[in-house]
Length: 117
Image (cartoon, rainbow, N blue to C red; front, side, top):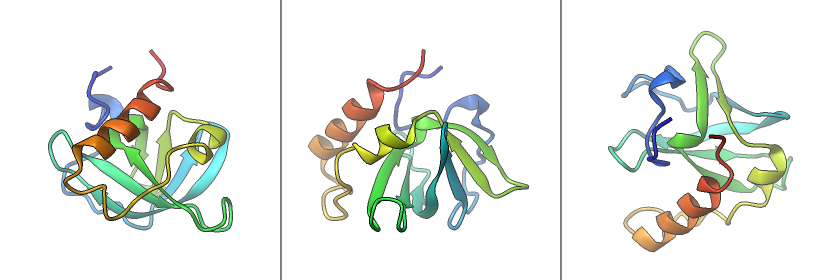
């Protein structure tokens, strides 16, 4: 496993440049929503997931390192997090997530402590 929370795991099956918008996102214990936005930037790859009614329309920022598998055929992304871990994550701030290293450190720190070895 890579130590970079902001990079896709080599085993995830994600191809840089692939359009993931609209893919369903599955936590270890069920569906959490759909990809609204994503980035493949080196050391800053992420998914923004629209959780819909599940947690009242909240958007969450998931670092690419939380992605276990991308299933292109089924248009699903499986992450190594539970629904509660995602629900309890720091709130997504669309104004801070681009260019604010402190915000990325906060998000990365939260998800980093929940990663499986």
